[in-house]
Image (tube, helix red, strand yellow):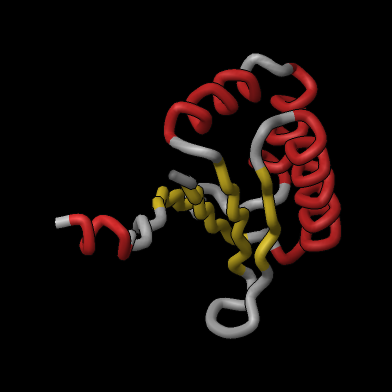
Amino acid sequence: MPIYVYQTFVLKQEKFKEGIENLREIKKFRNDHYSHHVEILTPVSGEHDKYALLTTYDGLAEMELQSKKMFDDEDYLKLIGDFFLENIVQGSMYTQIYRSINEKNPDKKQAK
């Protein structure tokens, strides 16, 4: 069952260009090196400086495994360290984890 990790944060306006470039590097690095998919979400309405990362994992166990791999990777830690320290407003990151609901199987209903 897929797991979706939705992380929002506020980019520092004075570091906007650098922040977007750093986000693109993080997305590319994670999509190229780990078994999950990352998208950058930009605001269309609401708070204009709040951005998000949406990451899709195959399941909770896979999320845990990929997280361990990322935090054992010095290159990844350098990328996110720069991002957190220089490009986002301190304390603005908020993470939520979701899973999808299984579709009802009509065959099971008929088998009863």
